[in-house]
Amino acid sequence: MMFAAKHANLSMTPPSYIYFCKLKNIARIPSTVRRHNHGFRKPPEPALCATRVIHERTPDGKGYMFSWREPSLRGVEEDWLGGRNYCRKRCMDLVSLETSAENEWVKQRIVKDKVKYIWTSGRLCDFKGCERADLQPISVNGWFWTAVLQKLAPTTDRQQNDWSENGGIGKPQPDNREAQQGGATENCLAVLNNFYKDGVNWHDVACHHRKPFVCEENEDLLKYVRYTNPQLRI
Image (cartoon, rainbow, N blue to C red; front, side, top):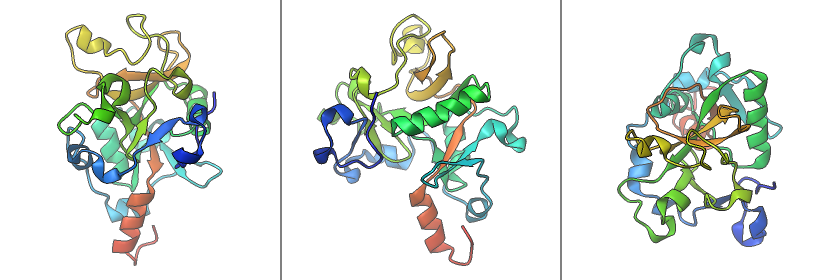
């Protein structure tokens, strides 16, 4: 499976290599998404940004924090928004698995550390402002990485994503299983570690569930805090 490199120019990239579909105009992302993603996003806190914990860096220099490795978070699990806000206050965000290399890198650490599941920044655009034609049907075309405001490839294009072929009711992901069984909509994206004997793959999960999480440095938040706090070493 070949995924596109980050920030690939779609007009120059062969369709078979496209892993995500970067929005042509970020301003066209529904304002609801930018504002709160069905909750209230916390702004970055300069002091926490300056002292953010980095457990590992990828070859491109980007830093990652794994919640289960952090002593202060040992045994702590958060719902999707809680995990996201923990990251954002530190100039990070939930991890966006934009390339096959990054996806495999994170999955290797989940397996090595024997972690059952994690949250990513993946989210279904299923709220006000998501009625755009290019997002229809939402269950297929409405998934995106909230941290970088990039659409995922359609869920039907199984070569360009890492959705599991199995789940709690034996159906390929995403299947919105919990809603079908009378519960909440499964509108957040988690990585599960062989939970259904299906390998380490993506699953749609209701956002209220609590899980460990991975924070990834966010360049936009870092730039903002550096600009507004030149006295701090960020």
